[in-house]
Length: 506
Ligand code: NDP
Image 1 (cartoon, protein in one colour):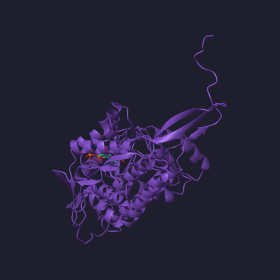
Image 2 (cartoon, rainbow, N blue to C red):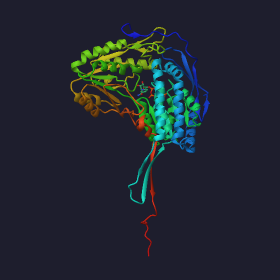
Image 3 (cartoon, protein in one colour):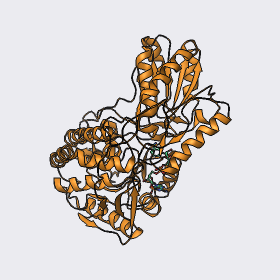
Image 4 (cartoon, rainbow, N blue to C red):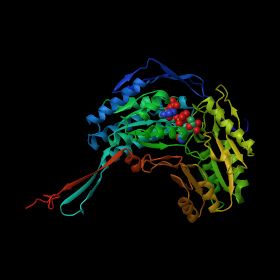
């Protein structure tokens, strides 16, 4: 590992394990059984959580239904809902450190990243509060003198929110404040690997004065908690982020009751680099896109397409930068890349790399599980594979690790075809100083987000989501908010009806 940059291991006592309970109808409920989370970097138990059962889940759904129907949240004014959502945003800002430390211990991600993630999430809450107050429907005043039509928007009802482990606090904040702003009631199930920051957020919601039963949290596993949240007839919508495989199961489960389903799933996101680009910035963005969150990110740019004329020099640039990325103890504020979330997942990443070399890809850098001094053996080296061809599994499947596949191309049309030759369509990026290249690329690629001369920027105002097997529906922004609303048309006659349907006989 001497080729790479490893940060120092921090000498500090870990906090006592966080004890997580379910939040149902405003009450904190311990389970008769619990489950533990062992920190992927430190190997110590960092949380003990109530294990959700079918009964807990039924109770949480029944509560969310009852509270929705009662209208104690759904019929509040937008201003009243926004007031509480804004308080939550302020409380998040006041609790960044506590939440960030727990997030880092459970996920293995660097503390600097957790702080930025939690701190940044409060802005999503503030934007959702703004939407709660400004949301409106349409009026149709051109239907004739005796008719006025209005289209009103109403909260969709009870929403199940199921989240993964890679950005537990951020992904929840992409969904929950928007659902609450719309007037929905919710039941949240975080990943069993990273449950605690969701419980901490629940504490802040209670502190902010959210009425009991509006936001319920059930901790536990996909079975039985997650699956009941998707099958139950009293749930009106499921909002899920996670793997494409589980997304498909959820979509099937939802079809039995025809409930709405919003899915944010995997990606195989390419950055495409043209010779006229600012290659220094492009190489930096490629490095960031490959290793951010140890590549455990739906938006990771796990494949790049480099123009043949610059491929060799560009790869050397990326290799040099990769060696400078600071891997190591997630509790060290200088660390940029931490541990892999579970030992199983680290093995899965390694199996992908081995399969790629067996398929003929060349390992230019990394390709090994490694340990950091005084920490566990659950880190993965920054890894670069060249000679990758479009049909190799490594070019097509989501690896979810710090592994970059390099492909080459000759023309813009060829690059667009290679981008689109994928089951996924989450995001794509282009690097060129030619505006026409950027525009043609943006129009031609099948993706929910296109970045030109940048990578992974996002704002609460802009929608996020994928096409093809990367998902359906959108999150954040005005469009994400609309997902949690139903549309109702109201037609109102003005004055007495002029022409009766039934003609009276003389
Ligand atoms: P999953 O997609 O398996 O799980 C995500 C969430 O769904 C978790 O809360 C999980 O609970 C829950 N869940 C699992 N099965 C069901 C079900 N049948 N019905 C309802 N909910 C269910 O992600 P994993 O965390 O297991 O990771 C597996 C792989 O998914 C990763 O290796 C990665 O490739 C990919 N992934 C992609 C993400 C993305 O953002 N695109 C995010 C995370 C993972 P539980 O954890 O208890 O099973």
